[in-house]
Image (cartoon, rainbow, N blue to C red):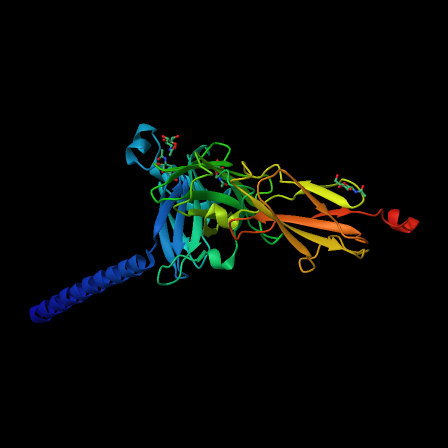
Amino acid sequence: MSDIKVAWNRRVREMEAKMTVFVCCLFVWAFLQVSHQNPTNHWTLLPHILVVEVDGTEGQQPLSCLELPDELMRRDIKNGDIFWKKNGWEEEQRGNIYLLQLEESLGGGNYTCHSKDGSLLNYTVVLIQEVEANRRILTKSDKEGYLKCSAQNYNGEFHCSWTWHSSRVGKVAFINVQRVSDTQCSVDESGQHWTCSSGQSNFSCSVDDSGHRIVCLEEQHCPYAEESQQIHITVYLRTEHFLLEIYSKRFYLSEIVKPDKVSIGKVNTTMIEWSYPTSWSSPYSYFPLIFEIAQLRRRCKKCDNPCPDSKATKTWTVPSTNICQFEVKHKVKAVCVRAKDALCNSKWSEWSYIRLVPPRRVRLEHLFPL
Ligand SMILES: *[C@@H]1O[C@H](CO)[C@@H](O)[C@H](O)[C@H]1NC(C)=O
Ligand SMILES: *[C@@H]1O[C@H](CO)[C@@H](O)[C@H](O)[C@H]1NC(C)=O
Ligand SMILES: *[C@@H]1O[C@H](CO)[C@@H](O)[C@H](O)[C@H]1NC(C)=O
Ligand SMILES: *[C@@H]1O[C@H](CO)[C@@H](O)[C@H](O)[C@H]1NC(C)=O
């Protein structure tokens, strides 16, 4: 009898040992699962804005409500009383640490944490940045020409714009402009004015009302000196689904300069004159423009812009004077003029246009469409 008991007890002990090993393995497996899922590279874009990189696999990212546990004690808050909301909707998880589940590009949002009575304790905006499996950040760079940058002159001001499909809603989340690395950027309280400073150059940028365009000024920019380094601008856009998209471009001002339209006037029936755009850099002897002149012999009835690129009949260089005159040929009905930096191969201005003969009488229904 006792032999059987001993044998039985030994068996039970063996079973227990095996169970322990099994449970241990289960824990290790679960831990490996979690740590395998716990991938995320993350970085802080601005206070309260956390960027989490995802590569399509599942992952987790802990968020803390109050960073210092002492703070809970000091404010007499019980861990279990803290609850979380995502974009205003209450979540199930409780406690000071919230474990954010990431799946594909989901998981972004505004995570607020609240005390028992519902008052706001803190918040973290989580933005999702998609990276390739090899961790290369998906940046749409110069090649795609997503950012279009242009300057009216050499004074140090330029603007960059981008187009988004009308169905997309996005906001500027961060801007970085620099000629040298180690530039620090910050935003003011309105969230519209950015400053990027380094020892060598300072930029200030503002987002305009459309939300699709920024205007930047390089302070202490010297228009007369040759630029030794390119400007590197990076715009971080946040979509309505809390995805982060990054666009960047590098350029010299001389590459993106595009004069404003010239204004043309009529001196008499055969003579036109125009002047340098008032926004162009002076002195004009130092910043000469060349002009292209197109004389149109035929009227284009339906064109919005009758100035053709191809039919220019004369290119004229006017180096240093403010007023330029040109005698038009006989029978010319209209003249177009545009300007370009004479020393750099940058962009032409938009065409300006003047009619030399009054338009023929138009039928009434053209003036007052039904
Ligand atoms: C609030 O959350 C942010 C992260 O979004 C964190 O940096 C900050 O320390 C938190 N504030 C407190 C008081 O813990
Ligand atoms: C996130 O929520 C906080 C608290 O309600 C609010 O102050 C903040 O503006 C929100 N941010 C965004 C991007 O929704
Ligand atoms: C840029 O601005 C900072 C702070 O406003 C200033 O200390 C620094 O001297 C400026 N740098 C240049 C190159 O002007
Ligand atoms: C038009 O003005 C120019 C310059 O003032 C002058 O030389 C020319 O003779 C004038 N032509 C006519 C037809 O009046």
